[in-house]
Every structure is written in C-alpha cells, then in structure tokens.
Amino acid sequence: MNFSLEGKTYVVMGVANRRSIAWGIAQALHDAGARLIFTYANERFEKPVRDLAKTLDRDDSLFYECDVTDDDAINTTFENIKNDVGVIHGLAHCIAFANRDELKGEFIDTSRDGFLLAHNISAFSLAAVSRAAKDVMTEGGSIVTLTYLGGERVVENYNVMGVAKASLDATMKYAANDLGKYGIRVNAISAGPIRTLSAKGVGDFNSILQEISERAPLRKPVTQEEVGDVAYFLMSNLSRGMTGEILHVDSGYSILG
Ligand code: NDP
Ligand code: KAL
Image (cartoon, rainbow, N blue to C red; front, side, top):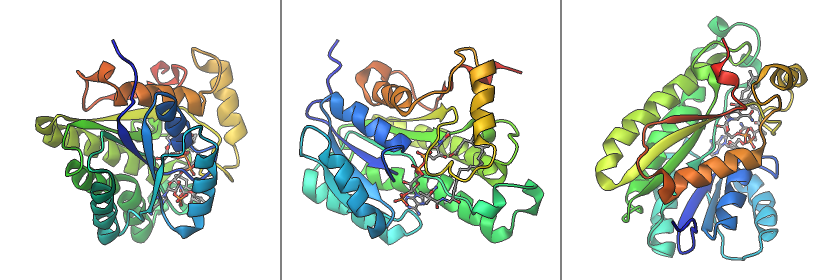
C-alpha cells in the first residue's frame, strides 16, 4: 500500500497561527508529499499564513483570501484554484466562530444574530465550500471538517457553538450523501480540547485540560499532530471505504458517561 500523497493537492482552510489545528493538518499532509493551498479569512492573516508556509521544506504552496460568509468570495476562490492548479484531491475545513460573549452564561440567552452568525460561519460554510470544491475535485476526493463533542452533548459554556456543531455534523452527513456519487467522501474529526487562538480567553480551559489528563482513557490531551495524522488518514486512500463518519480524536474521552 502506498501512503504517499505526492502529486495530490489539498486546500486547508483555517490556519490562523502555528497552534491552529489546520496547521497540524497542513504539516501532516505536507510531510506525506502533498501540495497545499491555504485560505484565510482576510488579509490580516495573509502574512502569518505565508510566513508559516515558508517553514515547510518545499515551496509549492498557494494562498487565497476566502471569507466563508461571502458567496462570491467562495466561488471566486475555487474558480481561481481551478485555473491555477486544475484539480484538487481534498479540503480541510477548520473554521468556526461565535461571538465571545455568547460562549459563557446560558445558551438560552443567545441572540438571533449571534445564533445565525455561529451557524453561518461554522456550519453552512461546510455546505458552501463543499459545493464549490466539488467542481475542482474531478478525480474524486476527501473533505474533512473539525467538530467537537459539544455538538453531541451539552458541554458547559460551549452554548451556541454546540448547536452549530450539531448542525455541522448533520451538514457533513448530508454532503457525504450528495457527493458520494462523485467519488467524494466527507467526514469529521471530533477533536479533544487543544489550546489554540479560538480557545484563548476561555477562563477554565486549564481545568478542562486537567479533566482530560485525569479522566480520559489515554490520560492526556490530544495534540495538533495527532489530529493531523487522522486527517492524513482521511485524505488518503486508506480510508476509501468511509464517508459520513465522525472520528473522535480525543484520547477516548467521549466514551465516558
Ligand atoms: P483557530 O483559532 O486556530 O482557527 C479558527 C479559524 O477559523 C481561524 O483560522 C479563522 O480564520 C477561521 N475563521 C473564522 N471566521 C472565518 C470566516 N468568516 N472565513 C474564513 N475563516 C474563518 O482555532 P482551532 O484550530 O482551534 O479551530 C479550528 C476548528 O477546530 C474549528 O472548527 C473548531 O471549532 C474546531 N475544534 C477545536 C477544538 C479545540 O479545542 N481547539 C476542539 C474541537 C474542534 P482567520 O484566522 O483567517 O480569521
Ligand atoms: C467548552 C469549551 C470551552 C470554550 C467555549 C467555547 C469555544 C468556542 C470555539 C469558538 C470557535 C471560539 C470563537 O469563536 C472565539 C471568537 O469569539 C474570538 N476569537 C477570534 O476572533 C480569533 C481572533 C479567531 C482566530 O478565532 C476564530 N474562531 O475565528 C470548548 C473547548 C473545550 C474546545 C474548543 C476550543 C472547541 C472549539 O470548537 O474550538
């Protein structure tokens, strides 16, 4: 069995900095020989992403701005990708957002705008980018998104993001059903807590990690590298029989009652 991704091209959406899970995925795919296409929400993140990509030992990456709240931006991005590389073999969707002040207190206090914003960026975007990417995945491919346990059960403070992740999980499954006939698979990785820019400012993140270290079967939090390796598996031919699946990369935490 050949594990190489040489000759393959993958879009990675959602690198903000070196701690991003998307960067862990990018490194795993790069190490397997893949060419990478990075997208970032706005020009503020262009330089950090380009600087990070310079640390890779091949200089074949491409960069596009793509704010997923903007349909024109999504369409233009994938048209440009089609013109520039012709075909892509996969896409990592590592994007979520909710208003900071709605990630504490009670879910029931979520505003209409905050609810719609979280669902727009964190769930609908998977449908929108999958549709656009399909036209560039002419050889079939694999789409991977990142979800969290808070979409399956109530996790304190995750609030509207948990409801958006439930929507993301269902979006993933419906997209898998639509795209299977084109040889495109769609799966999700449910990652355990990792300290990233998104997690920053979360008051009790230390105690969340402590709980993992004490109770998760593997007794340690997961790393970006561990999530990256499972994304590599999902992008590779090894997972060719899987679609519509949620893989928990969480040190086993989700099996606990
Ligand atoms: P990061 O903060 O590193 O990444 C979040 C990314 O979302 C940023 O790169 C940001 O882009 C992007 N984003 C937000 N709004 C938009 C938008 N409108 N258009 C395009 N991109 C946007 O955090 P993580 O690596 O933690 O998050 C990646 C994914 O992993 C998220 O889906 C998150 O829910 C999920 N996850 C994280 C866990 C954790 O513990 N960290 C656990 C389980 C799942 P930009 O930087 O360009 O603004
Ligand atoms: C129960 C957990 C504790 C944390 C609670 C909520 C976390 C929600 C994640 C969500 C993606 C965070 C934000 O949207 C942050 C945003 O309001 C402010 N940050 C930013 O704008 C930065 C600059 C940019 C880069 O961030 C984004 N997202 O664009 C959940 C923990 C245990 C696990 C986590 C962190 C899950 C997850 O989904 O990230």
